[in-house]
Length: 262
Image (tube, rainbow, N blue to C red):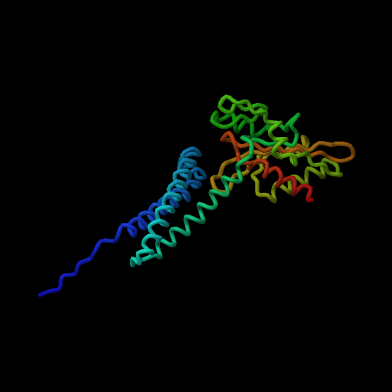
């Protein structure tokens, strides 16, 4: 007579931990692919952001379920393979921690999508203006001094002055042609795509893309003579979205630091 082997189903804490690990994996996939979805033009930025949001929610839900199941299973001395579940938890903590830190870093930043060192007469886009006008879904190239945030009016220059007081014109003790060359090299070093370089007007226009989502933001730099030296003004503006979580301010500051290191 052959022996009958009875395989018992995993206890519910083990099932819960495994379900949590599976949920984490789905969340990780959504979070990881959300950037390329927009960067390569597969879905556009709104679906990509929704994918990231859904991925983040699944990460935290899966993390909670996996930890609860793992703790209860351990307390009951249930035997099961903990490696995959532990790896999923580590992945959720790493990616979830990054998302939380990014979210917290954006707190307190006003809802702005452009930054300028000259708030009275911001450098105008010329070549990039034509690019934006071809797509009505993009933010206009003109400087917008007031934003309507669900019925609340936001004065853009005042909000920038309060949040980013360090964004100021860059003064160099060299003639405009030399200052222009410094700016041109700095933009090249940053890896931005130059759209227009007009030395006679002291104007350089360029486009930079964010690392993960590939959001395109445009920059215009104006170099003018002031006194015996030069004044350099920088303006950076997002093509899409209402707020930028401080991205344009960081971009302007990065260029400022290269033009005139502290």
